[in-house]
Image (cartoon, rainbow, N blue to C red; front, side, top):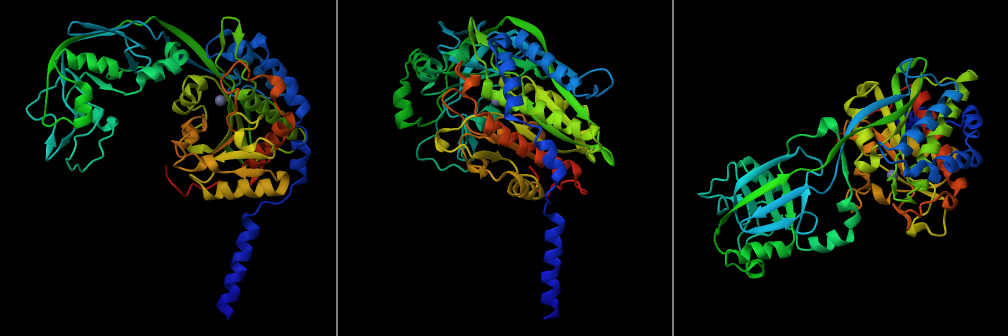
Length: 502
Ligand SMILES: [Zn+2]
């Protein structure tokens, strides 16, 4: 009996220690985050004048200057005494400039085949291309038996042998890896509906690509080819591609042709910037909470501006308002225990480049970075919540820290009471949003994250993602939610614990 009582008692204590308490001081500063102010900032950075804020281009620099001007006006000092920015070099490369000949045939990039890496060193490689069948290696089926592909290009059938029991599932990525291990210098494989994909995403394929300068290394060229191109290749060897796909390749069949691959892509060097507003803490100053959003968008096509009001204008203006609120609290004697780093990153639309550069070159050590709260598109509703603005998708909150997840839940109940939708938090969700915004670069470094997102809508990545479609009341609600969550994380006694690993 006694034991049971003490057990109940112990749970009671734990509950009061871990649960968050209503803090009227936090409320005072949360209330400085208003729909009116959010709207004022967004009408500026999502205007046509900002040209869609493309990374490395004029509009992004204008948005950078706007952020700096705002942070300065709140009395936030440069993080290193000099600067609000972290610059990084980028390589921008055209999607054209690749030539491929195989035997007597010449093929055209982004028509007959696609090429990766999207940004690479220019070079010419040539020699022998060997067809290696399925490109797998098991005890009872070895595509590389009696084949030496060192220094050669390989052509893999993107399919599996029929009626052969295999131990491995042999995804294409496994086969590319195996080919590289065998010394192949380029890998070619067929993707059935590639021609349709190229047509559908023509705009994406034809656009120039960017990569962090430091990340451009000599990677193996991977060429996905259309079914039509595969048919042509097989035909020149008197083989029927479709028949082989249907019936399977009975035994290891191989042929080889000469190839030449010329990579000569027009290339330019650009610089871009992350913008940092650092508000130092007090007793736990060395510990840093990062609040992030990307302020870049996809730019413009001639006179057509992609304003990116929701993506991620809403996240950007939320950062501005949160910075102001924390700074005002500090000025009025309510500094946080931990430091707050407002991190407006660029390069997101080009492949999470700004946040990757930050986590590869952190200004504040990652081991002292306690949490990252990331905001990307919070001002609209998606198809699933057409008539309901009172929701937000949360992604990642429980992946590394159950404590963070509980804190986030409690803060919402205490102050905001919006619906948390965890649909996209599911590991098996095909959208894979967990990997698709800047928080992922923190999560992969074992820093707990929460990603706030209200879903995709019909104007996603279109010129129609404009400011008049934003629900600023909703944006205000989520901005305050993020602020309260940050307040709690920055001001609690104990650092948020990591209890799971990536
Ligand atoms: Zn975005």
